Length: 130
Image: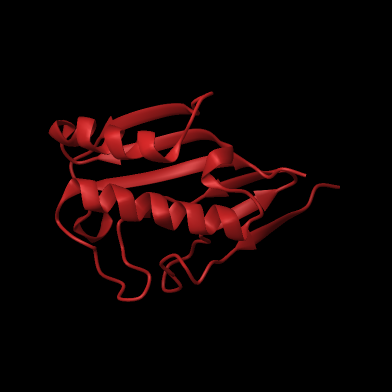
């Protein structure tokens, strides 16, 4: 019988008013909810700047992954949503600071808008090492 459990990190934004978990772990894989550049202490976007939002988004993801027993370095697949493809290179530069070879599989999608007025949202699937 397979088991799974939710993950909650105090070092990432809590969305307790929504029907979602920050992440779910199933066996040796963690699946995160999409994260945006919200400061976990204030609950506000860190900035309107896509670079600063991308940094905070990846910091939030790393906190959730660490809480799950993983880490951003164990990312297998990333899905990036951006509201303007002109931000692609900036977000990509920040993303590259957080991952290393072999790079995770990744998709990037432009969308008309994101929750909370964010311009960047990222979700990942990562391995939980033994």
